[in-house]
Length: 110
Image (tube, one colour):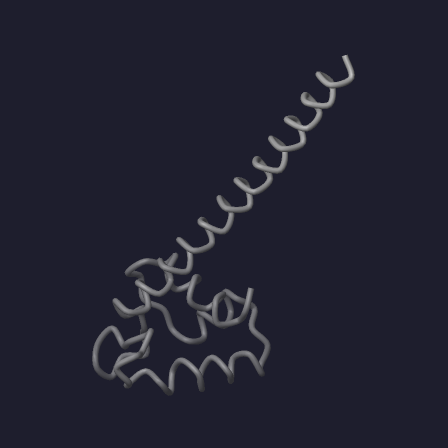
């Protein structure tokens, strides 16, 4: 899981509960380099329309996910669930083919 995904999902699972950048860094045990990346990639882009994080109120040091951030995290989690289901379906199909081949072979040999 990438740092971007870890940060996004951590904030998503907090729901509407706000956080500071230090709380985020401490909770995810980020290195100084990772903290710097988070600040540059997420905090400094906070004022764009594509921002995933926003201040709880003007001048506050507390942040929360924007509706766009929640939506993106939800889409990510849904895609992971679909991947898991697809893998399960693939293995079920392979198992069915093997069983079918073994039954067919047994009928031919008997």
